Amino acid sequence: MNILKTDLHGAIIATAQEIFSTMIFLDIEEADAEEYEQNTPEFCLSSMLGFGGDIRGSIELHFPRETAVAITSQFLGMDVMQIDEDVKDAMGELANMIAGGLKAFFAEKNVKAELAIPTTVIGKAYSTRSIPGAERVQIYFVCGTGIFLADMKYVCNS
Image: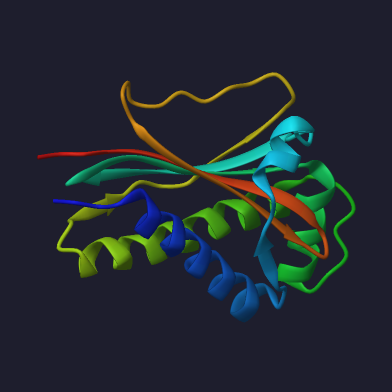
């Protein structure tokens, strides 16, 4: 099994762009990682979903408050003013849809992947951990509502 990071990087971008354009009606672009790594936005909401099978790890989406609220408003077609259950559910569903797209990508590569149930965390002082020795693909995205980070950490089982 050989999943190249460059292939996975492209699959994450293509999947996220398709979901945002068809489900949320927002165009997103990959942002300059160096710009945002030096001035990391204050993420306060993360939705994540685990993978099992031939590939183990997780896809995590990290959002500043304003971006999560604005994306949810667009997604649900209603005004959302603060992080609430609607925002948590919408961001969890967004992570679920992106993971589903990646599962299809893995299937094309003959890599079996099983998905867990999405989890959403809200706060200011939290961190996530991955499998020791995991590969990592990080992509900052920018859209009209702000910036967010897609972070995939994974290990391929031989």
